[in-house]
Length: 172
Image (tube, rainbow, N blue to C red; front, side):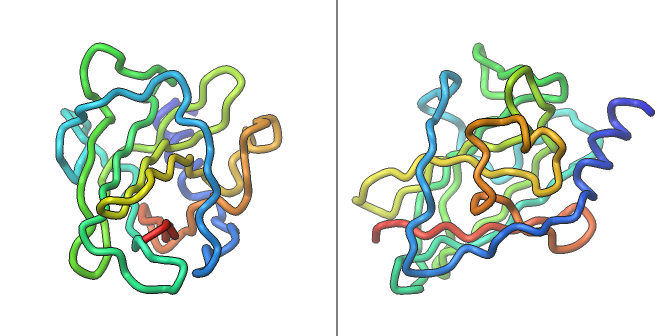
């Protein structure tokens, strides 16, 4: 099986994660050593990649279940080989939630790298509030069992085909 095929299979694994609920702020996790400031503003992290692999949608909510308009979301993850672009901004970018707190991100399914399962780093911030830094995980990924940082409550939920969702709850 080719690596590209394996990545596609990983995306199709069943998403059995726990649904994020209002009232409970999304758990914080480390930003890791690869965060970079000043990422470009964009809703697609695809640069010369033929296939999307993942469309992540969701809503930024307050603990009172109200949408958080204009929340800042900054995403970054590894490439197809499990490496981060530390010179440029490949697979890095930020965007703002719309008036209903919704966001949509096009990207790839990141590869695993030694010691970690597949994951996407995210920083989320309601206007003028504290930044929430966390990571999102792929349910059913075999690497989850071996990753000490993995948390099932941070799993994305499978919607259809290459689409997944996650709702963030932040201080607002």
